[in-house]
Image (cartoon, rainbow, N blue to C red; front, side, top):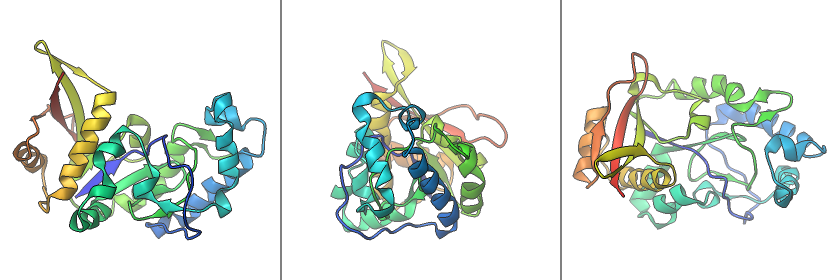
Length: 249
């Protein structure tokens, strides 16, 4: 089972070690291309506009410029924000932490794919950026990521945002987790609460040794763990199924 997560814009301020460690060595070449392009961009006056930064975020450009030699920290400690706060990688048991490192894959505009135990420096780059000279990063990464993940087997639990989902789609073996809020008999898609719920669901899936193989297995597992879930209608041939997690207001 793979659990696909987006990164977070919120990140730790600085690394603690000079060592950089990355899984998926097949991505070494595109990683270097994106890193070089990002550093080159940050030497220009256009960097803030291209990266979508406000005046108050100008320090992110200096951070990116220092990336080639910047100190690193584990991905498990790098990302902050609602999803990662609720996932709570640092508070997992040793067994669950090992499962998290096997099961969780974080999509990154700079590094492509990351495992929780990988070590990288803090950075600022979104998959929605059109980075000169490669252009849209989702399209740039898609061939390389597809070559890696298409070769994997098993259920894919997809909890990425649309921006990062554009870089790879798992097809019919994927289950996209959608969070709906129920109030007064009506259900609506939510955003902030969705991030929290996805973090809780991801934590549940690494705390259990069970390995669901189908969307039905996943629904049964999450139901047994106390979640209210309902399979949605299939999205179509070749598309991931959708699993709705229902939360009360």
